[in-house]
Length: 299
Length: 296
Image (cartoon, rainbow over all chains, first blue to last red; front, side, top):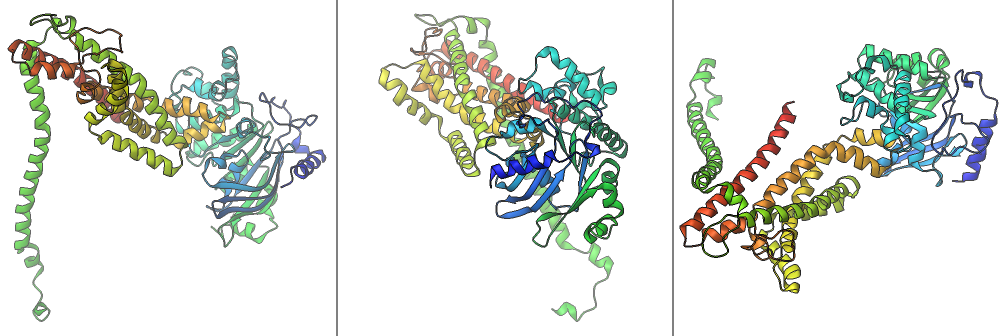
């Protein structure tokens, strides 16, 4: 793997004229950590994946994915169970490294920096690329307040006096402030499932990420709570680069700007079939496999 | 089979006419009774111990027993030497054993590869089963012999060796109960691994760690054999001098119960009651807490 080539390629990709949707109507939140962004290149949050393969020991779970994820927009990843959607998502903030035996070949560029290069620290990367999980996982030993700022407190990055402000801002962005502002000292686990998930989103937002990865964030929620989470994604879509894995095609069509369809081959390795504007994927896909899947003839 | 040539028995005959069923019921009833009796026998020793120690010890128990040292000459006084010695040695043993046990559990549960984890776990389980007198002899050879002096520090180390595997195993079990989702949530926020282990994993498993430590504490408090070759015992109240012999409640009981003087035997009963009381309170308090958690 040649790092220089990777960086140059990714740089060229960034210098290309941005699509209209890229322009953020609200100020881009500033990254507090020493994010490895190349000097002179404004933080945009574009992700360029180049020929990515993921292995678990000898088993190849994902093969040959090349995909450009536009900044400040929602990209949905859909596909049948077991096609490597979640695995692929986790390579984007190197969470897959927590699984023994998991390894990656290929490149992922974030604003032109190869996130697998030796200079990139996975801990720093995860402060820039946040994650929301399938099941709400607030810390059971912490209050609502402490849950929101846990990322800051546990990394010692904020003064106590600033925490109040971060809590309110994060909870407002996660559309949870009005429901919990009077009980911030209660345990995070005292909330309903849907509220817990929005609390987890607030927690992810509190560390000022550029990218938010969501791994089926509504699959454990009831329909009303799901709707709230989807509304929230719609509100966040211009401020963050959002990548959402979902098995719910209606959800993908409702919340995303772009959709990538994955499926798996005969060797059980997942691969990307096609990626396009969500409207195009759901009305007029290029590939027969995609059409079969979205029209329910597969999986 | 001849049955094949005969007419099949009616359903009514098949449902009611079974002699085998009747025999099975008799065996069932007697086996159940036996199992119940065995279960009862498990509870009897505890009740018997509680009864005899209380019946004999309550009368001999008084505030003097805790506050007064044995008389320098003759008979009388209390067990203050033993109370103070036990408190100091068990406290020092906990100071040694809890950090080591918890850190070993963190290594095994969070960082070790499967094979080395299994090895450490196996060693801990074997250490729990090592006769405690052997631990006493082992500590004797390197903390008593070189100094030619029985001492409280050696006693504390011997007790710590008893406590370490208990603390380690209970801590490891409680860390195993911490959901992986919490580790992932923390790491995905860019929290370093060490901080995740400290503030999320250990913090969430803290009730279990405390439970294990308290049970190990109570266990060490009642150990006699490891102290025979190490702390030895002493009729003097030894506050803070770990380089000299110290007494302990089990040693006090052991020594005084063997004297041909009824007053000393009574003191042994009183000390036994005190020891039982403290150990029982710790056990019941710790277990009641975990009952409450399971229900609530």
